[in-house]
Length: 370
Ligand SMILES: Cc1cc2nc3c(=O)[nH]c(=O)nc-3n(C[C@H](O)[C@H](O)[C@H](O)COP(=O)(O)OP(=O)(O)OC[C@H]3O[C@@H](n4cnc5c(N)ncnc54)[C@H](O)[C@@H]3O)c2cc1C
Image 1: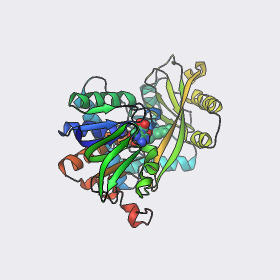
Image 2 (image 1 turned 135 degrees about the vertical axis):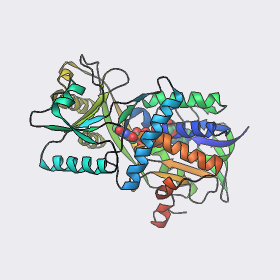
Image 3 (image 1 turned 45 degrees about the vertical axis):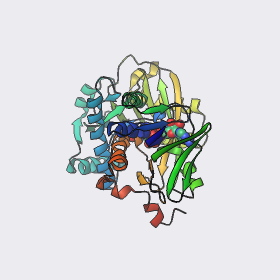
Image 4 (image 1 turned 45 degrees about the horizontal axis):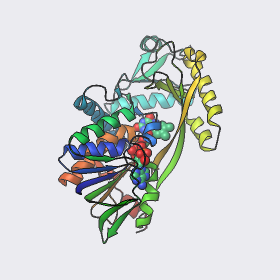
């Protein structure tokens, strides 16, 4: 069987591309080494937002990613894992407060839903929060949401299968066999598969996957730890960023907890059990019902982190029919990037939105060898 498009890697990014390519009429082969959604996408805080995404082109890309999620959720119907409600954030200390004020102002002036609400209003929205007395105003980002990413991935692949996409899990692509500037075949453990175009969406494995082709696209691996609690007596409805802790509802009914400095400790071989305990202790300061909770499990995910921290999407340098997407904030960006790349591959319609994010920027920066 020869396919129009083969997609390697079925996290949120690859699954979105599979869905969009099948929707565009392509015959799609979709391959994952493990279980779809079992990589970084299944171990993510999965906050859909564009509140700290600079410069402006990257902010707009993420805001467009949020719009794509809303459209996709309507298109799929039923529970496709999308949870709206916005996000709340407050700061502690002069510098952090100034940074948040400037950010809310900057975002609102760009037309992003960002506003100040009173502490009382924030507590009406989230009765379980104990916002410190000295905090008078809380930032509210009304369009933010969170995603049950494994659920959306499952829905995308089921919808693509209904359009004749062939989805195979437990299928590692060992390499791409190339000749001149073309990918001729995908090399599997039990033979080869062929497709007119190949899209590589292997997340944190990107750099290692492409190196044998003589292409060095800098994509680092940045671990992060999240802890899941038992079910709280008081529900939490949305994403909350408080000093030293961020939390949101977990799809299983508990709370999902994380913190940037704890990620750094996790990256330096801190014990997941001890670090999860630290997260729970911090959560209890801002969400007192957490005092009665225990840690149900913890998840360590590895962020694919492009060398300049911004999305990489486009042709693999040196290949006419090979493409790649590698990005941080892939939960926010997956559906948008999947659709834009599917349009480009299937309909030969490159998007100007992606112009600042092409892989060959690393060539001109002298970071790629060919
Ligand atoms: C702790 C943490 C918090 C985060 N918080 C957020 C957030 O709040 N908001 C946000 O937008 N983003 C967030 N991110 C980032 C986001 O989760 C990632 O950018 C995104 O999940 C990447 O998706 P992906 O599809 O590229 O990769 P993955 O989900 O890792 O998927 C890649 C897939 O490729 C497969 N694969 C690898 N090699 C091969 C091969 N050779 N052959 C076949 N298959 C292969 C793997 O099995 C895997 O399933 C967070 C990440 C972490 C770790």
